[in-house]
Image (cartoon, rainbow, N blue to C red; front, side):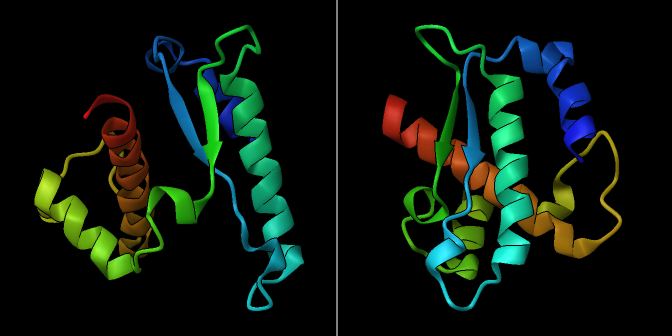
Length: 123
């Protein structure tokens, strides 16, 4: 996974981005989550941060906790907001088709993070 992220970070459309947002898991202190599950997610988040950030004076990558960007909304509420903004997922187009319908949740989360930054910094 980290190798895939490194390759992904070298794509021209990624290099040309001015800003990147990476969700950093905050569930270490939640008894419902296993540290054995969360540790790899944290490592992947950290690797993505490193690959996307040149660590100059104005870094372009930012890590945010899920409860910050989604304002502690439940998944359904977040999905409803995203669908209201960009339409129903049945009309979305992807470079590579999503085979597992459960993976749409990650797309919704990514759009939610982007909307959070748009709202916070530009609206």
